[in-house]
Image (tube, rainbow over all chains, first blue to last red; front, side, top):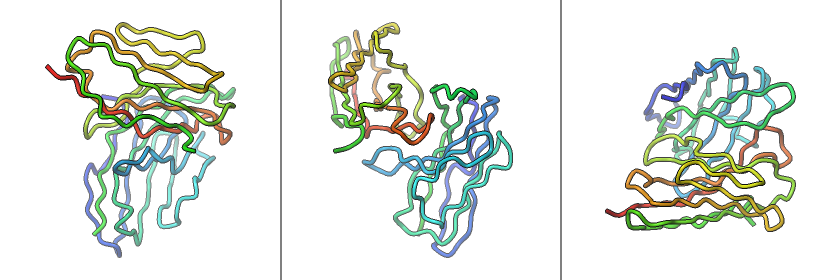
Length: 116
Length: 112
């Protein structure tokens, strides 16, 4: 148990649907991340939230919209997705002291998304 | 050139053998280095950090060669439970303190 939970674990959605992925961390961390993992490709960082402020948007299409209401919760809102967006979406968290310590990240179990 | 490059394998190794993986990274300004492990259909988990002086954790030894920009992981006396994909991870590629860049992973299967 990593202390990072994600819901739902599996999601099938049509291209015209709107859905949201939820992530919650119970570790007292102050930074949260969304990653995409596709088959045969490395994990791709999508968004970073540092002390609830978005500090990284790694050229992600606008059909993915993140929201971080507090340091424990992170959402990824999805709309008008494409079949190529089918992947495993992983949330992670870490502790970031003000000095920018480069520590480890703890991952949630992921949401397996299929876009039909 | 990929930012972090690994041999995808698969490596099929008999139980008890020693196996080593290498990983190369492209940005000489990279600050910190890790090996993560990912079991099939599970999330990645930190296996160990990699320090400049090299470090060991039980059967696992990690080495960093900054001059040649590669990282290695050595597993001794391999166990069936070591079967997994091993991800080489590099931090600090100029985008921020916590932007981890992952390799595609090396798949290891330990054979009884």
